[in-house]
Amino acid sequence: MKRRLDDIDRRLIARLQQNARMPIAALARDVDLSRSAVQERLERLEQAKFIVGYTVQLGKEARSLLLAEVMIQVEQKQSAGVVNALHKITHCARCLAISGEYDLIAEIAANTSEELDAVLDQIGAIPGIKRTSSAIILSTKFDRR
Image (cartoon, rainbow, N blue to C red):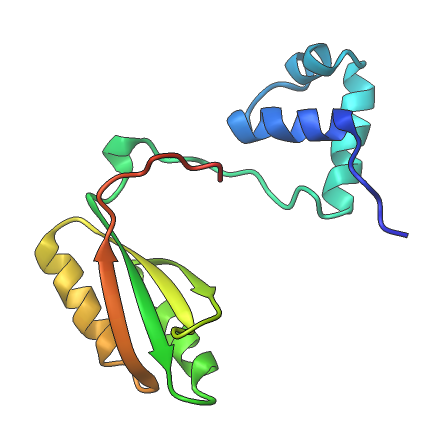
């Protein structure tokens, strides 16, 4: 049977999403449990794959200046090859499968407009891509990731 998250688990996860380096003692105070109880909960959450890793969030100074979303329409039965080719492009931060007219969205990070243009040309040349449509991200209104 699949384990469900309770309120304390959700609070622990929320605090770790804010600061993945938060000490166990501080987490324990926040949820009013002992350090050992919090440690056991975190281990269970990791074993159950509710928590699969801890990461670093980059500040504005470390991020690329330009972000673009590239909608990609793929030829039939070419999706795996296209995804593999996109994975090899270091400027491609992530790739999402979607429904609708397009099949994929690739998020591209670049430091200059020339660099972005070159990456878009590189994507357009991938065998199996029928067509693309790109949009440069002007600002992030909020991000809960």
